Image (cartoon, rainbow, N blue to C red; front, side):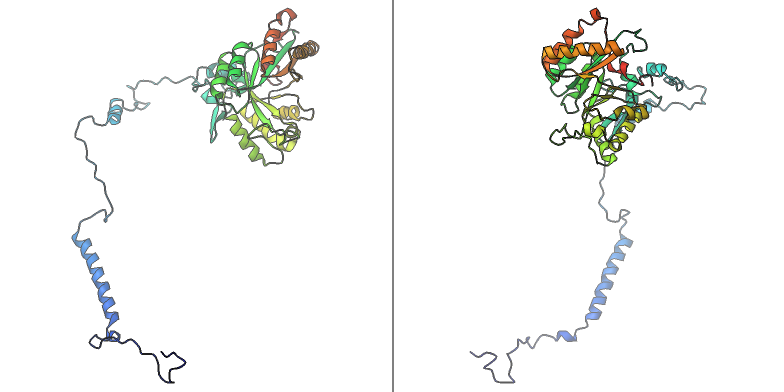
Amino acid sequence: MTDDLSRPLGQSKKRFALPKNLPDLRSLPFGRIMAGTGLLIIGVLVGRVLLINDPDGGRPAVTVPISSIEDSNPVAQTVADNPAPAPANDPNATPIEAAPPLPQDNPALNSSITELTARPVNDFDVYIDLLEQTKYGDIPRISPQGVTPFKAYSRPSITPASANGKPLIAIIVTGLGLDEATTVDAVDRLPENITLAFAPYGQTLDRTTNAARRQGHEILLEVPMEPFDYPQSDPGPQTLLTNQPARTNLDNLYWLMARFGGYIGIMNNLGARFSSSAADFTPVMEELGTRGLAYLDDNSSNRSLSRQLASANQVPFTRANLTLDSNPSRAAILDKLTELENIAGQQGSAVGVVNALPVSIATIISWAAGLDDKNIELVPVSALMQGNQS
């Protein structure tokens, strides 16, 4: 076998040759063939358009049979049986009864609240006029008539101005809603004037908060805020944090607000760092003022700016005097309650915060039963809030 190196110069490999009886393809007129083919295709398309009557242009179509049965469309029949109301200028028209407009210029809004109670509520007795829809669910707002959620959901009570010197005490039980059995027990057994604060993470919050309000309790929403040792101490998802864009914290606040309804305002869960940062806390307090909600400071931080910011934004506000069960024993709680009574006697009112522990709840129930003998009045927390007439 020879290869390219051993083949004599001037000789090449034998090339493949077509059979001699085939025509030479180089001599065929390819341009004319292509032109003819194109003209043929165009002619076929033009002929189809001229000869075939297809208004849909070949698009798929579905044919739906039209029923010949009389009254086959119940919706259309209902509309036909109940025609639209006659124009207002028709002398034969039947007048439509409209709900009376709510008053606009009553500073105390008492008439507005009376009217509001006759207006629609949702499945959890929350006034629809006081709800704004968001991507997270309904959140509180001031009604078009000017009624705030704080005023609408506050429990009627005497206030320091009407107590004639009688000491007033408000107790807030926090941490409810996480354990349904504990929550139901607290709702059923605690006096009506005890205010209940619900964490935003329970699975049955709509049911338990609704039960609390039907039992006569005011309720608050606990909002997680950044403590100084965050994240070692983490109050939960959607915590309001410092050094975040205001839009991020407000978005988290909307998520928290949508967990349930019917609350008079919010209170902090932890939050010593957040509540001491004016740049971060101010937008939140502004939002509360815009939505007609109150703020309760649990007094866990003496650096909190809540009082100043609440006043600047016309937010009903109060600050707790004592946490009653830092030592969760009956004797220690009773000692703190005695201290709270002394504060109320000296200042006219006092606010205590207690956790939803079985021992704390049982102690509060037995203590409250003896208040009449001490000439002390137990009131909901709204009664002791500055700005509670706004």
